Amino acid sequence: MAKEKLYFKLGSKASTFVDPKSGLKIINGHIGVVDARRANGSKVLKDAIEGGHIKEATKAEYDEDQAAPSKAAKARRDAKAVPTAEGGIPLDESKEEGSEDAPEAPKAKTKKKKGKKG
Image 1: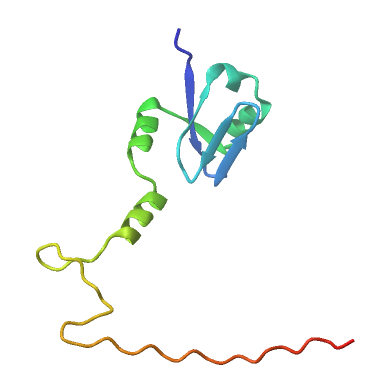
Image 2: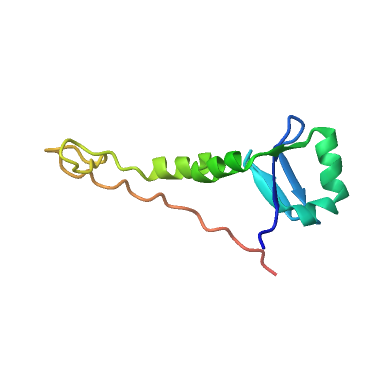
């Protein structure tokens, strides 16, 4: 027997929502899902809906939300992307063709702190 699910998204008055009793957690504009049985007993969930903090969503919206990668995942993927030249050869921006490696800068000398005598 399949349990009935309820889907919720953030309303205009909230940026995140968490209800420990029902187990609903909505972060970063994603759509949250909870069993109808657990949701019915939660006063926090009921008050949040009436106050405009969260609103009901559809299963289609939930499925679309799960299929789309998050903004954070896109940012991580873009950060890992390696720039390539024609032919798919990775570019090494630190070395230019025909130039020699530059010598490393000398390390700075630091003074040791004197401890208290006593």
